[in-house]
Image (tube, rainbow, N blue to C red; front, side, top):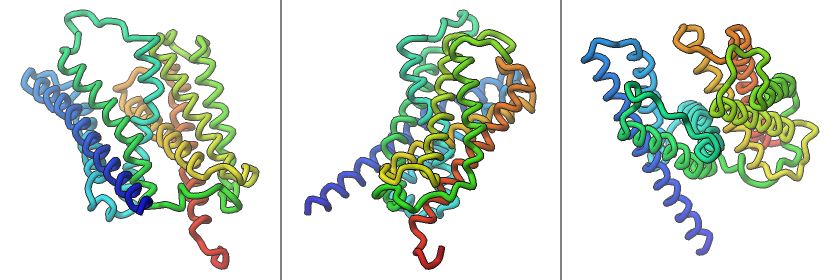
Length: 300
């Protein structure tokens, strides 16, 4: 009876978190639609494409929130819900440390009055991002636990990845060290000195790369079998999603000429390509480890 009550409570929490995520993304979506309408009306459509892409992403985020909240979400095919949750978690959940620390120790410098974003837009964007991120932290693990319980139950044990993706430890280590050096104030490979917010963002990226490397090691042949399996699975899922999503996002706009990085262009291209490849490798290692946990021994 007690177990049944606890399960119902977790389902209720997951549904509430899903609705919060959908509402939060709807607020962000509202701002983007207003921006596009204003640009089209004023005839200044320089950023319409970028804003249109973010509108699609916001719609996908709101749909994910509804999927977490509704019973039909549990019936969605794996190939649809997993990549969407992976990218959403990578974009937003990984940014929570940056948002918390940045708001406390490195507030953004005020913008000139002529270019300042109206207060209501800033509020909706902030609430949208923070609300979606926090809701995903709560709702996404509960959803994944319901759909794929073997990925969260027990310890790593003998069912782990076979080590074919351990090559990714080298690029993950290089990314971690590079981002730490830049966050500490190094300017090698940079066009300009990063401000406080930029350095915190690099530190957050380094944290993700280190987390991805740890999860890869923990689920590999030499990791401890006593580690609770949910820990490397969760850390690896979010960290690899962050490396892939942010790397692909920045790389796409860099190639399109709509993004000016603080890094030298060649350094930025290499950096984001490595992040995308390493993120994919970690995801494949997680998938392999989960497959070995669910596959009967005689079929391995």
